[in-house]
Length: 111
Length: 116
Image 1: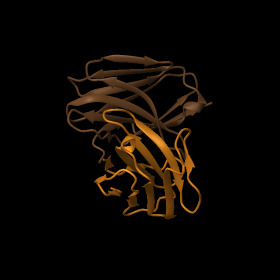
Image 2 (image 1 turned 135 degrees about the vertical axis):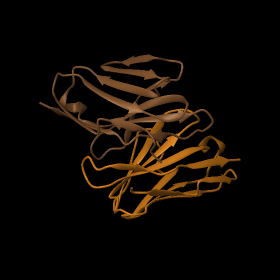
Image 3 (image 1 turned 90 degrees about the vertical axis):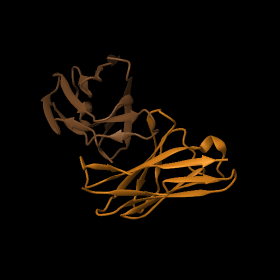
Image 4 (image 1 turned 60 degrees about the vertical axis):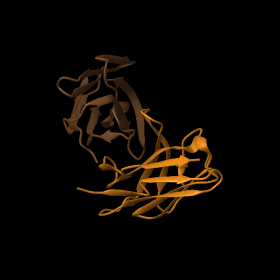
C-alpha cells in the first residue's frame, strides 16, 4: 500500500534551478528514505534519514525531516537534465520491516 | 487504484530448497516489473528488471542463477530463490509499472522469506 503523499505530483523546472519535493506520512517512523526511478528502470536508493535526524546531505541532495509535522523534503540543487525522473519517499515504521511508499513526484528538468 | 499482489506474504523453508514468489498486477498490464530485496530496516535494493517475454536484467552483484526471474505474461512475474540458504532470508518486494515512460509504479506488499 502507498500511504505517503508526495507533492507536487509533477514538477517542471529549468536546468540549473533547484527542485524541492515534499513528502508527508501518517504514522511514527524509524526512518525515511528517498528513491529515484528513471524511465524503464527500477528504484534507486538516494538517501536515508533516521527519525532522530533533522537534515542530511549527499552531493547535490539535501533532505530534511520534521517528525512533529510528519513531513520530509528533498531538495536537488543546481538541477541537471539527467535528474529528470520520478522521486519517491518511503517510510519504515517502528515495528515493521517493509517500506511504505508514497506515490511519487515526477520531475522534469528542461535543458 | 491499481493493485499489485504478491504471494506468498511469508514463507519459511529449509536450507537447500527452492522458493517461488509471484507478483501479479491485478487490474492492469505491466510490461515491466521490478524485484527488490530489503534487509531489516535497510534500504530497498533493486535486484532485477523483469520484462515480459524477454530475459530479466540483473543488477550488479545479483546472481542470476540463484534468483530466477520469469515474466511469462503481462500480469505475472515470478522470482524463484534456488537452493535457498539462511543468508537469503529477506523481504522481497516487486513493483509493476503501468504504462510506459513515467507510468505510475505500483508495489506489492512484499514477501518475507525465512530460510532455516
